[in-house]
Image (cartoon, rainbow, N blue to C red):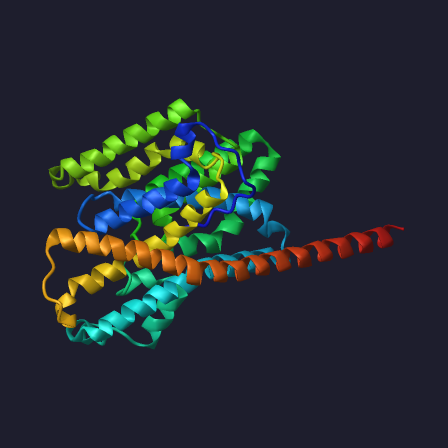
Length: 362
């Protein structure tokens, strides 16, 4: 869940564009994950894959517009992106730990694998998907952080190739995409190579400046929804055909024209808040479900299915909003100040280098 950081307040567009604002779309994807974990729709993996597409686009954009100008660009970028993911994740991780401690059976299970190495890997995010997790959705944050570690190098190579000419760039992109498709079929889930196709697709959308037409974008979205419907309403397909497990990847890639159109739609301030709220929803949403699944531990008794869903969704909405307002926004303000300070340091270093170069030349 990469944070988008467009600037400026845009005027209202036509109704179709208003419905498909970038921030609202990201919140919608987070809601799809919530629905999957509520046992409603089995399309959460597709939503996460689309998140990876969006992450590739925005990281490419932010690297060029913000981080490349920083003092020590790579370290500034990695620190900033870890700073974006970790605090809210740590907060929810601790809440999960408290809940596990309150459930004797669960806590006994935790003690079988919890040790110092497990704690360090969990807090570091990277490599945490290769061990038992309190927050199952943490696997995608592991993948996201792995992408952040290689993104500056990947972007430097692609930007260099792009500057040398379209033929070299296109040829390199072709082989990169072909290789990432092979990795999609051959790599375990917890490695970035497994999902590099989605990040790479988002990066290429940004570097190429490609923007789909609205009609083609909506058509691609409709086809993607149809593929998702095939997964939901024809479950035997997964058992009858081994390749069907890649339908979530197919549904995400089919939606690429829509993503290319959506990311370039105007995003007013409120829409940006919705988009940033999606991360809180994504990280927090399993905690109310965990608590309600163990209501007997609190002496509440069994909750009916309908009441369970309504109450869990209410708790998810309220908890996510509180986390966003009380935790995420203040920490984000500190992170933005850090990035601006690194940018200022970079500008000063560049100015000093220019003066020294002129002095040497004269």
